[in-house]
Image 1 (cartoon, one colour):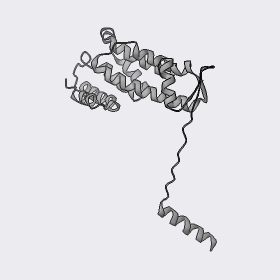
Image 2 (cartoon, rainbow, N blue to C red):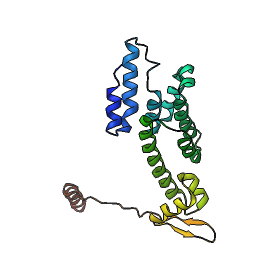
Image 3 (cartoon, rainbow, N blue to C red):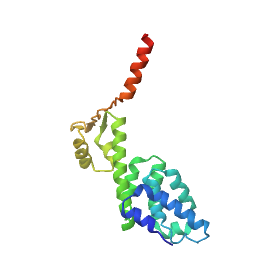
Image 4 (tube, helix red, strand yellow):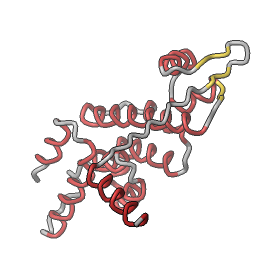
Length: 197
């Protein structure tokens, strides 16, 4: 079986395309009647869906994986553990699931990329949801130690109250860029002129 498109996507770090590539390849081989279950890269396939935040598809893929494969390949179960934590919205446990397994070289790249993406996503969530938050809670959400998270958020402009162990969130200024299109201005001028006369 030719997994070149998956390997190419992994090499080029196009992790957002992996789920679609795997889905297409799986459809192709299953319509040809080829037995593919034993050699299929289920871990990468699951992680591809998780990377693009398509937990429903990851869940359905997990249900379709033969039980024998789940038993023989513990990495598949570890990938699904991340999916389970996302499914139940146990945001802090996602980082534990990522760190709780010794990933293969092949999966390590996409797991690391997902971890970084997920940390940024959680940071944006905290940024929009809180004005103050404890260092301990922030560390749980971002999957870091309290010292690391303090340094990370201070770099982002947040302030630390050492006495209360609280962080004050620095809201990012909302930049709205107005683009003035000359044709729109012309139409508006003609419309106002028409109303006046």
